[in-house]
Length: 198
Image (cartoon, rainbow, N blue to C red; front, side, top):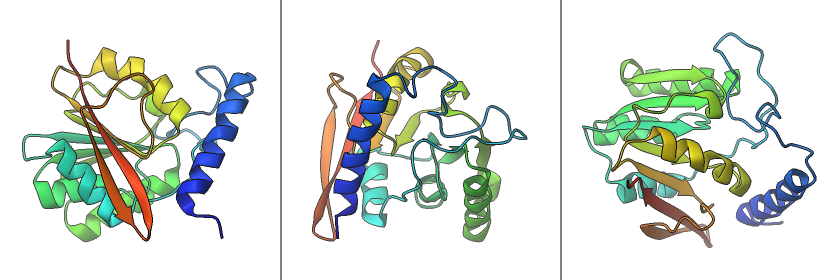
């Protein structure tokens, strides 16, 4: 059986090749994690749903030093576990963004069960078309090429001091402020931190 991290890396390389050939290039190519509007029919997500392990979620919150003054956006939120943990454990407010309406329904239900639904906004939208100017922390578990496409938006919309955290994938030549190595079931997961500076 091939380890999950290895499968993600192999898939990421395949996606990179597709992008290089222009198969998925362009702003409306489907390389997004939410539909353009809450009521629109969602395109198939380019990044498969794969939840971060609890140890990784804890590390992501810790490396970003999430606290009560933060607004945490998860771009490609899946079941909402990162934002829910940020709100419940750290006192933050949160925004879940995903292209898949089922993931938004699931994250909303999980937040309701955790008693924090009223402190989280749920957006079924394209992450590239989502206004993230209110974010003080942005959480990511995407693909390398998606991270790179997202970089200009992060620089353009986030305020100085905002933190960006990515599980597993880096940001090319944008050097991280810190990296945590998180052991999970015999594998090591990288968690990267960057800060917006002007």
